[in-house]
View 1 (cartoon, rainbow, N blue to C red):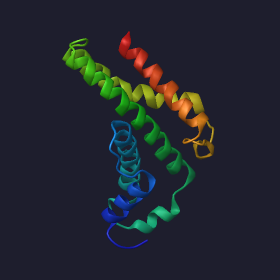
View 2 (spheres, rainbow, N blue to C red; view 1 turned 90 degrees about the horizontal axis):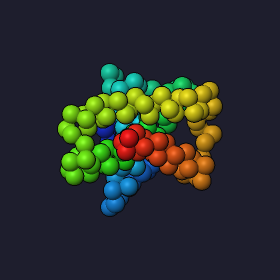
View 3 (cartoon, helix red, strand yellow; view 1 turned 90 degrees about the vertical axis):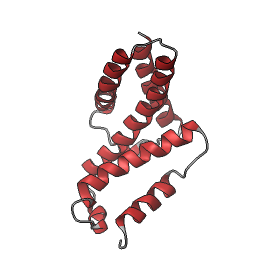
View 4 (cartoon, one colour; view 1 turned 120 degrees about the vertical axis):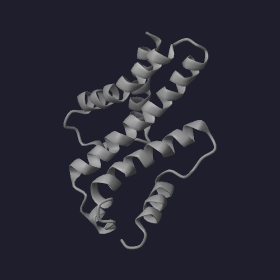
Length: 146
């Protein structure tokens, strides 16, 4: 891997999740970008050396997948929180508290749900992976409704 690391990461994001027109497509792309940002900070930022990505270990890949799933659900949840804030169903203070706590909740949930399971073996685009993401979103949404 050579060249400008910013261009390379943009190309990776495009390959994994091209820009889309719908809110769901934008959320999916943002989640991939969040996961790539974790890799960037851990492997490239300090040196600009993209070849370090060739040596990603299993924990780094697992963390990237976990970040993408959490970010995807969190961003969908934030969209719903924004609607509730606009309709005055929650106060600004309550929304800020919920927002602050939700990402940590989602991260803890995925860690509990999957334990030591290899997240690279989950087919996230298939039924089981999508069902898990929907279930995690449902749990987060229930907190918003309570």
